Image 1 (tube, rainbow, N blue to C red):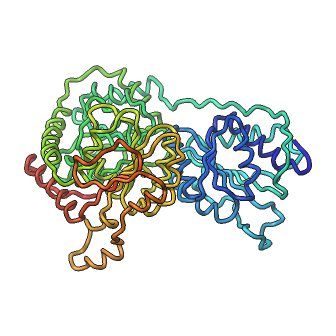
Image 2 (tube, one colour; image 1 turned 90 degrees about the horizontal axis):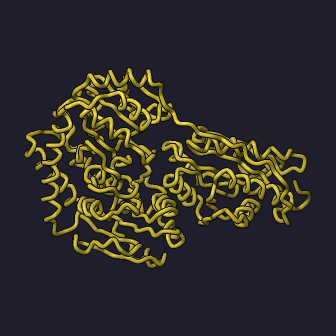
Image 3 (tube, rainbow, N blue to C red; image 1 turned 60 degrees about the horizontal axis):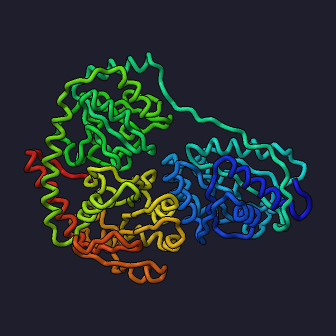
Length: 555
């Protein structure tokens, strides 16, 4: 490696070049002095793309969105000190959602630690168990072997495939100097295989599942777009498929899909003989309450994490879900089961009810926005759905008949932080809609500065019901005032001036006819909490009357 004043920049250039060779294309940067060598190296690399944002929290969520959309890690470069604390929420979400993310955090050298030096804190393993791997890089040293960075970064990149990784990078001053990049070994090549199962085990599962007439397939959060094996298995078994809003099955509808299943499952509804769940968690609370009522629940996932909040899973299979379904389906003869038809008939009835309600809607409701958005999206557009009520309404109502682009949300920890920044990260790859609530936008307001800088446009659709009105569904009758101030955080703000501040287009719409998704920017829909709750109750009542059931909708 280089010598003298160029040592830091030399080291950083080799580091960035190794990461680019491994496959990292995007470096998300929050400006800072201590990280100068890394920033200059990334900005100067001919094959590296950079994205700069002044807020570490926002830039980390931007990288998270990119990881969701591409399945590849983006690198986040920060300076030392409290910068790392601001990155923590995105790290927690990436950990819970298994999203690739690489953190390159600049640090003070060892001699400045625990000496009250400015902007110095303990950065070693600061993210604890939320990262898959941590490594403290050495202070740049000319005696380091040339192969050191090649093997160290290759190992970090391997860990990145399933979640966040943290590399802490201490640098001594001076930071600048002309780099003298030396020849380095190429990164260690790593081949990632698929988790599969033997033909013998597949045959055993085929025999077992074929004996079940009344089975239900649940497709939970599944980051991969391929699900044809699951579709084939469902058809052969004659079982219905309940696809979560975060599954590829929802954006690319497959055979045996049951739209509107969140309205159909409940305490008094039909029970299956077996639940076969592919992928991870689901949004629908009714479904989460319905699954544990079954004697046998099988969970198939490509990782060893337990996805079983009710502790009801009886069988676990660690295997790629689509490969499992493909191998089992090959050994099953098609059955003439009618269990799918039972659920399909009920779902068709719900569709007629919802169509009648929303197609005759004069004033735009929160659910009406979701209904129209589902009919507007195309296959070359992504949709990011914010937490609180938007994701719940979308899970109940957004069932496209034709393929649309990928659907995303931050459901690992279900936070309202960083949602705008995550949407901007997704827009590194394709045009993006973001359906979020007013408090979610307020929380991440400064990330609106990212939108003009994304390669593809972002359109924010904000439901403004003047606070966190999801809490209104749980308000005790005698504590309405307390709930409004301490839980709903009621406000009277709108986002017209915010759009102007960040030079974004702005629309405020009230009717379905005014809702236009053409021009990127902010679309604000002002709604009434009382009217929204009334609409939810109306939908439930009409469905219950039509299906002759009685249950309560629980979010």
